[in-house]
Amino acid sequence: MNHTNSCFHHTSNTHWQLLGELELTVDPDTDHTVGKWLAVILNALDLHVDFMNKVLKSAQETTARVVHAEAVIHFKHIHLLVYAPPDHAPHRHNWGFFRIDKIKNPGDQDYPNHAIEFYLYQDE
Image 1 (cartoon, one colour):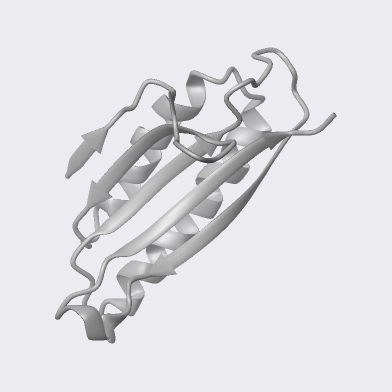
Image 2 (image 1 turned 30 degrees about the vertical axis):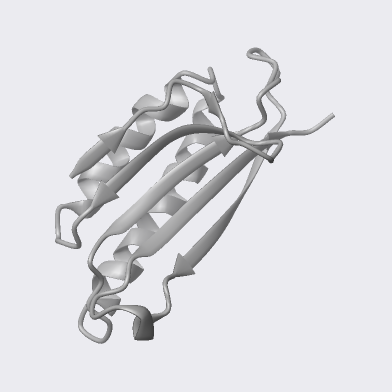
């Protein structure tokens, strides 16, 4: 497992700031590791517990699907990335998120990588 905590570095050429990236090998403990790591990353945003649980559940469901798909597509790694706006207000509680799953073309390499990107945003 490689853990990269970018400490709120701004992603170039976008309006998103990378909060953290986690690289995992596909194994049964992936779900537990994702939960612990994501709790630390999201805690820095001072989010409502219900919202944090929704993001966590989405991440765990997605990683569980990747682990299950391992029987068909052998993934080299799972990359979990979390983004937020660089100018987020720390105490505003109207948050939403969307998730993007990416699989590097299996034809490009023997074992493709699977990326799961979370984009957290604040409603006005």
